[in-house]
Amino acid sequence: VSQFPSLGSPAILRASRLAAQAMSKKAVVLGASGYVGSHVVSTLASRGWTVTGTVRNPDTAAWVKEAGAAELKPLTMAPEPGSCDAALDAILPGHDAVFFCSGFEVMDPSTIDFMVNNAVSVVRAARRHKVGVVVLSSSGGSTNKPGHPNELPKNEIANWSDPEVQKANGRWSPAAKTLMEINALQEVGRNQANEVVDAAAAEGAPRLCIMNPNLILGPQLAPGAISGNSLPWMVAILKGQRMNDKIPNDSMSTIDVRDLAALNVACAETPGASGRYFGISGAWRWEEILTALNKAYPEFKVPPRFEGEAAIATQFDFSRRESLGVPMRTLQETCDDLVAFFKTRGAL
Image (cartoon, rainbow, N blue to C red; front, side, top):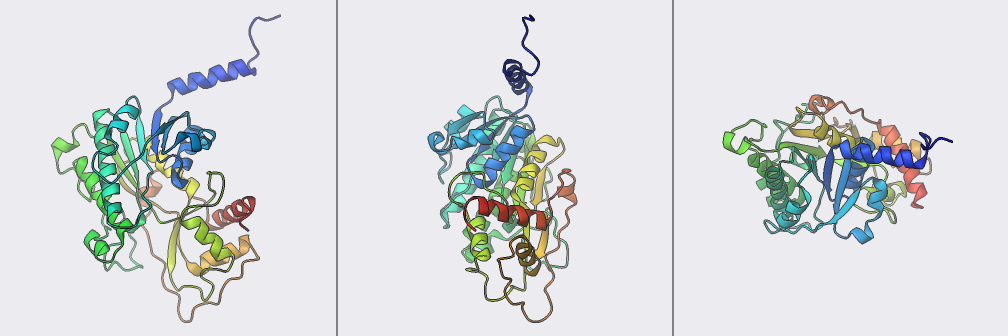
């Protein structure tokens, strides 16, 4: 009888998995229990990365390990500068990439302090500990250049929102994302066109990538009730509780959360990736979105159409996103999977 276990035995499989993890790259996902962060964890793990996730309370977020995290660390961020520096110094050493997927629930001026100060802290900590790449989750709300017409394709380099206008209009979250990006780029010696303008700051800086999504759809990995902003809103639309008077004569850019996670990981895995990337699969008129939802869920009744000519959907130049090599799901595929997910959670 052979003294060696078979190649398919649990002992060999476990040893192979541990060996693969030992040779794999290592990533930290900040905000690993969030909607996007948990999918980033899952995607990284599926691609062989060893993932450390940070959460407020590891005891209540054990499910993140099922999503693929090898380890969970407690981390609480606050709006004050340096609030997480000590924790980052304990967590980041020995890692190859860090993904900033944390958010702030309070919609007032303090959200600007939270996003800017913590993103800057992450970039500085990555520099201190020689983490090669930082990927920031931001928003398409930072890419709305004043006066830009829908028919002219937007690109990430030229299209910047005006944070002072955003603040004047009480749009604290978009203003926070805009200012977060500007300050993070300055930390690595770059301007808003992603050009090196401060050689001293650029020397030894981590490679910085920024992801700019808008409406994020798709399954939620966190157990329990459907949460967040976009998913409860979509349930209300499908139940006829929202957007039930008339189809808006407007458009919305969307992405499947799984594709967004893949773009985040591709930023880390693509050596030349740097700067902003649209985290968007496409822009659709609401008439198209609601029709796709009706096809996925016939019980949903599309409201009456608006009168007059349809507005042009916002146009995008996706050449930078496409350079990352991540295929995008179609709108219908995302809507089909979204409805299926809602049914599994008893929401529909």
